[in-house]
Length: 193
Ligand SMILES: [Zn+2]
Image 1 (cartoon, rainbow, N blue to C red):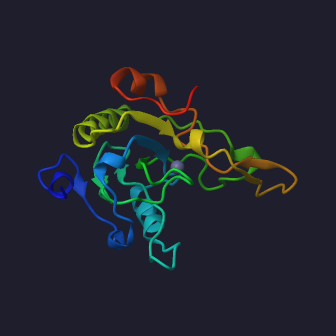
Image 2 (image 1 turned 60 degrees about the horizontal axis):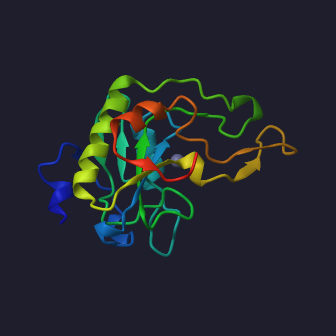
């Protein structure tokens, strides 16, 4: 089954060093794809974050399965037959796609930095739609799509004013073109809108 993800694929394969420490799963268990923004300026920065160890017992960290750069290049960092840590409470049955996008970088939790004005380049969204098609061919139970912001509603104290709170996760954010993505995939909303 690994071959489906590693050989003759339309994406680059650049697996994280700790992938063997991530829990294995059957592809049949994957029913939802979660769309993220890295909230970092570059793919290289996202890689640096993804390689950090957050779970000492397994020597693993937080990452999506696939990354799409602003120029539309797609890379697989974790094969979908492993559980990646990308969305609190929903990792086991989900697959994470990370779009390189600055989001609220570098003042993620500042009260005056919650706007999300950077558009997603068309080429990046086209690459996402293509990837969603490819994934549906390979994952028989993949029927749903969600934004990270729909699944993680936690708030945290603001970095510039601890008396206020801001959303912990806002990605993929208000500039993500949900209408286009819904119109061009067969995936349906995971969370009722
Ligand atoms: Zn996210």
